[in-house]
Length: 453
Image (cartoon, rainbow, N blue to C red; front, side, top):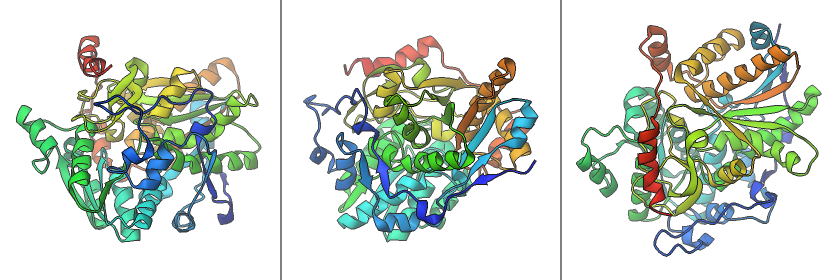
C-alpha cells in the first residue's frame, strides 16, 4: 500500500518556539555554581553560551518565544518535514496499531539536529560572535552545526568522540565539507584532554570528555562561544518545531497519538516530538503516553539516579539536576554514538521524576533488527539512534496485536543512516554484540555524582 504523506504548506512553518518550562507544574530545579552552590542567573552562562541562548535556558515564564525571521528562512529549505503513515510496517507486523513517523532525516544535515544548530548559529551571528565550538557523538550534531555556521559565516571547531571519529569517517568528512575543523576527543589540544589521556592513553572518549574540551576551547579563544546539541533547555525549545508541525499534520490525518516515542541520548529529539503534545496532558485534555527509548548500555533513565551532577567529564559545567550515571561514566562503544551520554536533560529529568514520561531500554541487536525491518518496509535506512525508537515502536505495536487495540503510535525518525553503513555491516556479519553495565560498575560511576550532593 502506498504511503500517504501529510504535508503542510511552507507558510505553516512555526513562527514561535514552545517553552515547556513555562507550563510545567514543577519547574526544573536551578543550575548551581559548582563552587558556591548558588543558583545561576542567565549572565552567569554568558562566558560559555551566546547571550540569547543563556536567557532562553533559564526562561520559565514565556510560553512562546518568537523564531527570528532569518532562522525561519533557513528552515524553509527543509521544513515542514513529512509526517508519514507506515502502512507497510503495520502490515509486516500484523498489528491493528496505526503507526506514524515524523521524518526529520530530510534536513540538509540528515537529522533533526539542524533545528537548533540554525537557531544557535544565528543568535551567535547576531551577537557578533565569530567562532563556535562544540562536541559531537555520532556526528549528527557536528554536521548540523557545521552546516549552520557555514550559512552565517562563523568558524566552527568540533570535538568528535574518538570511537565515533574512527567508526564513522564519513561523518567527519561531512563536517569538513561544510568548513569545520574536526578533532578526535580526547585530544592533546586542551588541558582536559591531556589529563584524560595521561590517566589512560587508550581512552576511547565520551560525550562528557568532548564537552569538556569544547568548553575549554570556547573559554580560551577570543570572541568564541560554545554550542550544545542536546540536554539544555534552549535546545529542547528549538526542537519544538517538530512536535508543533506534527500536531497539525496529525489533525490532517484525522488522528491523535495515544503514544509518542523517540530515541533518547540527552533528549533533544524526544523533546521536539513529545513536549508540544505533552502540554495537553498537563491541561487535562489528553492522556498520551510518552516513551523515551535508550540503549541498555547507557541506561540513565531506567537505572540512573536523579541528583546534581556535572554535564561533562572534567567538571567545567554548572551542576545540573538530572538523571545521571555519573559524569565519570564510560559508555560501551555502541554504534548509536549520539545516545552515549551519561545524563538526561534537566527539564526532561523533572518530567520523568513527575511521571509525565517513561523510559524503555533497548538492546543494540534489537535496535538494528528493527532498523532493517523499517528499511525493508518503509524504504528508509534509519540512523542507529533512530533504530531505538523504531524498536520501541514495534514493541508497542506488538502489544496492540496481542490486545486487539488499534492505538495510534507516533515516533520521530530523527535521522537517516546513509553514512552509518559500517554499523549495518557489523550487524549483518554477526560481529555486533549487546552490552550491559553491571550493578557494581554502575554504582561506582554514580558515586562520582553522589560526592557532589
